[in-house]
Length: 269
Image (cartoon, rainbow, N blue to C red; front, side):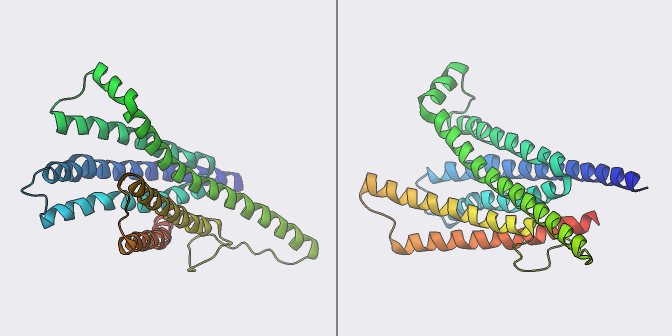
């Protein structure tokens, strides 16, 4: 009976991993359409026109472009953490699929840029010259940086799960030797604001820190490049506003992650 129940649980976990992989794929497709085919082409087209360069709605379109990536991360990262907890080794299907989708995103954006700027897709020889002249290295670096951020979170998830299982085995052994009752505390749902002994919640906290650190580092590099090429920076007020927005994103990533994982868990139940 226990073996049958275990097999059924494994089958249900695999079904849920497949469902969540489809959910991530659909979410990514919506993001790709909005960013690559709607907001980014509109912003690029109208920002190059002197008649619309100072229009208020152009700033709104630019804001939408800037917000799409963080919104995607806020949805995808907690879903990945939950899938790895739920599906085990089979759960790695989701991050592999998302990594391939991210690679396709950069290739697709390259072709869309050519289509909107030139009016036609590049020939093979022109594309090869463009990519080999530096554009290919830029796209590769952008892809690797995004994947580094994503797989760092996955690595921390695996580390926290391993430490949790090791700690649980040790506690069970000590309880068996002493004759005490063994209490198996459920990891989900997440009911506390902070619980670093819970590997799922600890990974969400690490995800917020990683996203915060990556964005702060990008702002620092940008300010340093301004100093090198123009001899000036955006100013302390603008820099402080950028850092505060990064901190807000890290907090939102953590809080929204708790709500998303609890929602996924309730759906499973």
